[in-house]
Image 1 (cartoon, chains in turn brown, cyan):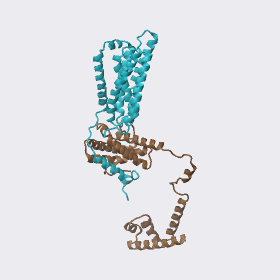
Image 2: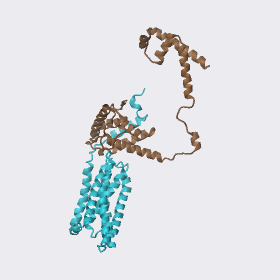
Image 3: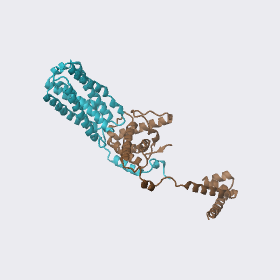
Length: 223
Length: 229
């Protein structure tokens, strides 16, 4: 998966989330491509940071935007979840700005960035840990909203899917093919025509009739 | 359908972009800080200047004589090496991305310094006729240590703040150790006595005060608000 960065630069944030703290990034055994992409990113970020130290606002903007997914990935790898990730990104951006003179252009950029982000993530986790939490409160437990699916929700969805499958299976062949290819598999008219050997006009008519028939049968079933 | 770039962080992209714009808009050029080794050398240079001034003022005769006593010489070497390595470690750990293991560097010279000073106590037990410092001298040593430590501490805190100490307590403790060792090393030419148990105890107290004060103040001084603005 390649993350598209708003600045137009690709970043392999998840691959950068872990690594040594010894100053030099060693590519993991993930493969040559991973290491190569990281080296390219490292090179590009270091160049941008050096330009930013010289006062180049455009380079600085591109640098910070390219850092966003990397910082976010490092924060997640550190165990930060949910909205707190965004807070860590904000804190890290502020620290990068304050500490930009401490980056040594002769050294790699990513360990510098990782150290800052990890520290801000740890700060955030510590602060969250200090907040008082109810650990044994029956009322709070009862009032807690479960973010997961309600019981029976999956059953209901499965019933609906089964009813739809039955209704589609009951359609005449031409209509069934039109629904399956055009409606469910989302193929184009041309592709479906080539696949089924029917004309586009016939397919449109079949789809129209099929939808009408399905509407009728499903409404009937519900009543 | 939103692009891939908009869902990488679960949402708040516009908030980040606003901050990026704000930071980039107010960007001013900065000069990259010199290497931590160079900055440590600068601080040690300032310490050396104080030492040279003191030596010129007090004279080095008594000091050279005391350096013939092995444990005093070892303690002096230990203090000097502790000051050098602790200053180096403090400056290195103040830079993001450098390993915290540098903090272990001053431990061997620290052991030498403390160990050799402890030998002085043993010598006092074996040869009780040694030159004992009076109460006045002890107070003098104590105030000397504090007087030298304060400017050295201020200098090192100001210099460390210019980087971005992400582990402020560790960096401050290392800075405190550097200051304490440097002050003790500077005291040696001035100190007119052989080491004794009382002496060591008072030194240990003074050194602990310096390290603790630096650790407490530095932890705040070197905290989140430090760094180049």
